[in-house]
Image 1 (cartoon, rainbow, N blue to C red):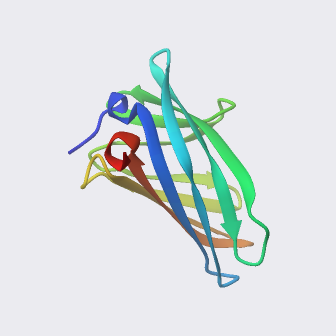
Image 2 (image 1 turned 90 degrees about the horizontal axis):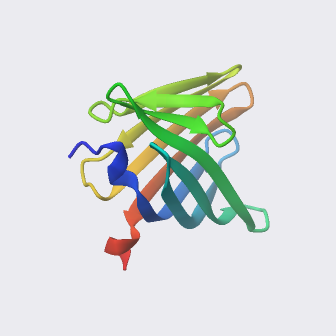
Amino acid sequence: MTPELADFAGSWLLDRRIRDHRGGREGRFLGRAAFVPAGAALAYHEEGLLTLEGQAPLQAERRYLWRAEGGRIIVDHGDGRPFHGFDPAAPEARHLCAPDDYAVRYDFARWPLWTAEWTVRGPRKDYTLLSAYVPLAVAG
């Protein structure tokens, strides 16, 4: 299935695995994500517990704004700064934030279960984030 923006509306369980290739450490974020209508867009908010190897767990959150534009989904940071955009039929994108390079590949093959895999590289960064989303209606 190729989802449209409206298909993301609702609440999701979020399980994110973090692999730091440079430091050889792993981490995990467990929480919830919500896509809430905000005009023609969806306001995205995630919150949960971030556990990084060798550190005390801490509460973490992120905000984005997802919107449809010309057959693409555009994702902006919560403060309105551009982040990335993708075609749901070919769901890959990059975000260059010099000197770092962020690449994402979304996988909707098992919709409504879906993943987002980020690969981040830069002079001081080399890590992968694999986020798995399960709608709360399915997770029950």
